[in-house]
Image 1: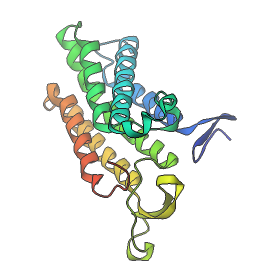
Image 2: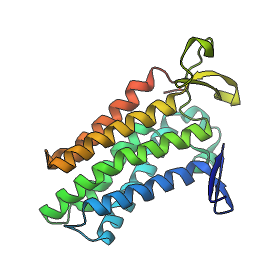
Image 3: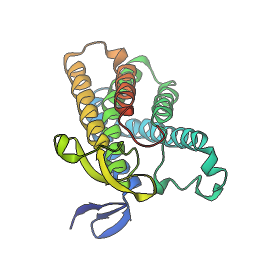
Image 4: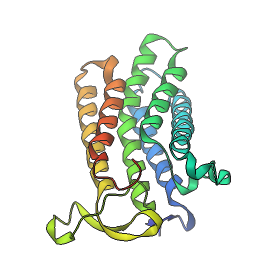
Length: 226
């Protein structure tokens, strides 16, 4: 098997690895490829890679700090798990802020043409990575949906039986799928803006705001602390 996901573990070329970082990593690679192609006329793939690494590191670090801070009651009693990112746990809005800050810091020394090209390319990466994080959460039962009374009352596309807190399996809203669909919608909008050349300097802020709005939009259907 070249690739497969079975809950908390993923099989990649015969290697079994934690699925949470693996899926985020794969989405980050896809985002890099798209961004490098989008910015190819202004910067080299090496420059795109440098910006991507800074942005990804900032998003993961700040997102993890936010998650730990918001759940300090648990992590204060279990400090050894604070850095265990393989088990999941990122504060989405904190991660978005961190990623945007990382892009700004990495592109600040560059000239205006290169800077705006990278901002536009980074805007395409945001919803791709967001979709990967939703996928990782679906596999690891994080950002799970609130319980519904009966699966038969709703379309099977939007609800499913899935684990939540303490691994309790119950009929739930399929929030992660909703998040992935909304991220795909954001990618379509930003892709259209890129293709048409509309509002070039605003692509990255627009992508960050739309992905944040998508997270908030499904927040009311989540069953976890968020």
